[in-house]
Length: 146
Ligand SMILES: Nc1nc(O)c(N)c(N[C@@H]2O[C@H](COP(=O)(O)O)[C@@H](O)[C@H]2O)n1
Image (cartoon, rainbow, N blue to C red; front, top):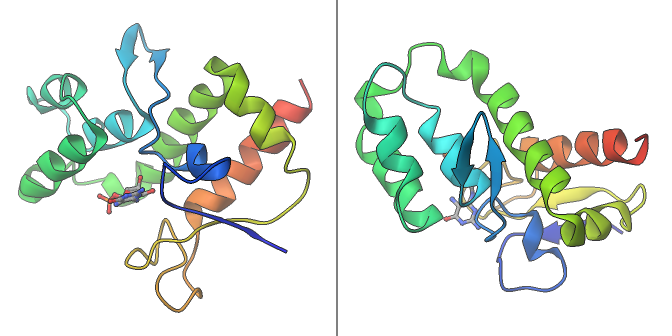
């Protein structure tokens, strides 16, 4: 039976969402959430990256990046999966309590149950690509092998 996650307040799997309040240090900076890191890296050669890093919430980071769609780096679709991988892996390396929750899921299928996102999540018909779930399962595999 798959594990569906989305709402950060839903225990125990809300921590799999990029909006969960689990910060980490990466590339010499502090990131409040993996969503901050992901959204900030949509931009190069602009002050936006640093502005997003300092925003108070993942929703603010998401909204800021959405409002500057025309400035998103041209290769974003090529690099977005690797940036997501980097953020998610670091989040679970850095936060031991949620690493244990991830590892305790064994080999169960993880699915971001977004009703609107058919790329990172499964979308309203649950047929979407579920890239975030796939990346979490890859990260789980790598952390298990450490
Ligand atoms: N929990 C939660 N709340 C939201 O409002 C969300 N949008 C998401 N999904 C995350 O949004 C990011 C996708 O951003 P782009 O569409 O690529 O700009 C990604 O981190 C999803 O996991 N989750």
